[in-house]
Length: 331
Image: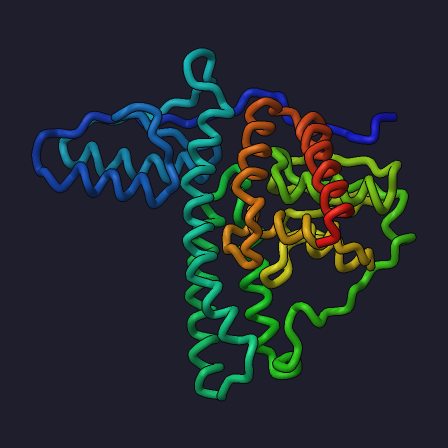
């Protein structure tokens, strides 16, 4: 049996398309419709053609936009489609994800100052203010998640930051940061498992897979699933995905979390963890000078390999060379 179990979804994506033509006047209608389409998360395929992944909610959303257009004297129709030539499903999904990834990145930038401020003792007044800011941030996060149809990169970082803030604001845990949580799991508990993560792996998930197979369980198998709706089976451990057993905690990426909980003490692995963190979270926490070159290597590898198994194999070779370098360098 292969160590890597790729469960990619090959069925064509069903899309709903809104095709419309707006009247010349009123002039504000164009901006109004554009904002409405932005609000429901639709992606432009052409100037007057917008797409959503097919669902009852998407149909209802498009129908409201259609109603606004026709009532203003424009023309519109909704149809269900399958892409055959020109754009591919993956290209359109990347277009959706690019918007959501930017939204997650911007939200993470707004969240980090609050997380940083809670690393020291705060007054009751500051705690009340922090709770109000947290509520606003969580509301923003929920809005982005609602429109995150294809599991864009960045949600785990935001989830981890918000969870860390929430923990810090609990009365009984004000003295403890996420770094003080129990380093839970023994190495034996991590062996003989199937490790599950989202499709479309990149540096954090690739590094996690390499760490598991290289240092924890050489016989580990991996499963790649859609970002939403997966129910884990017995014996499976999820990583770097929503509600996973191993995912972002506070300002730590998934690789850092697995490394800490496994109890592995290795300066070379810690150096790699700092690089993975800086590339994945984009916060320059460790200021690793190697990041630019390694980020380029992984980006090129991802372009060359769309298959998750192939990405992990190719990425693991990069990480293996990094590990050998830091073992000799000792830092």
